[in-house]
Length: 461
Image 1 (cartoon, rainbow, N blue to C red):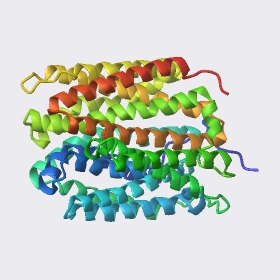
Image 2 (image 1 turned 90 degrees about the vertical axis):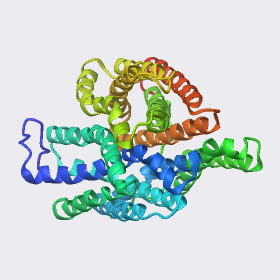
Image 3 (image 1 turned 180 degrees about the vertical axis):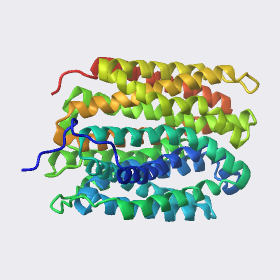
């Protein structure tokens, strides 16, 4: 019987493996780039296609709603059909939808194409992790490969606003979607030629009732949060939306509790670290996405920055996301996840509070310090959060727990844009709405810090 490779037998990564890693990382880079590059283009999109604040919220959230709702099911499809096939289909869809987004003739056409991009992104993320795990069977090599793959997150966060700003100012907002076409094409070609297909498991069934109900629930809750001010909270439309959101949520919980093959076993939430980790993951993305949605609008509408300058102004936030996770991982390995997570949430809340009293003619120093604190805070929070949740569950459920955590984070991103956009749209002035939004986000982040300190790393159920 052939022995499994061990850490001691690990060899340096060869050129073929490096090419596989590059191809898969390019796909992940593209998915994350899409979430950041759009932020600095929002004023230009509104000027060209109209739609106001409500339209901008849907441009951002059409992607994240679909992305969050399909992550778990796409992981199951990768097991059933083969991860390479699902990854390639996701890349092809992302390529086509990006090209079509550049030619969108109306706001609602762009929103619909953004939803298609969410389908492609949801297919890419779990499939790429599965392909990496199969390409690097030796634990030491796999750890290094996953470190490179994860570092792409920060690189995309840092590059997105800057590259997007340059493209918007020089070529217009449509160019940000054309940017993704060659990246998708290169990744698709490299995947087809270099990546091996994984073993298929056709016997694994799909939880269709759970999938349909969670998509409806996410969409309904997002609609209620984003459109409440427009329709009126007590209007028939909003009451119907509330009813649909509650009903679909209840159905999802019932399907997952009674189903024979649930995509999210509810027993996981009996583990304190898992339940607190899901809430913390949602909270950190509510804060981060709310800030990234709000600040480009503030820089361009209130301070008069160009799109390019707005992207550069976000670098104090995004650069720590690219470099600090390496050190955070080492600290977490030494002292555990609870204290780094708590510290990270406190830093993020402090940075958010520093920006809660902006003025149009104020200096940039306070904003700069706040952005640096938010960047380091987020980078101190997410790596230990992922480590804590995955370490708290049985090994056979690690994929499910990872998918659930990523879904909760994407759901938080959706809610962050929805809540902040609604507050900005309903306030008498942009600055007043920005102040209320930042105070709310700071309070939420402080609550997450308390929750992390109290529950992360506690005994398993």
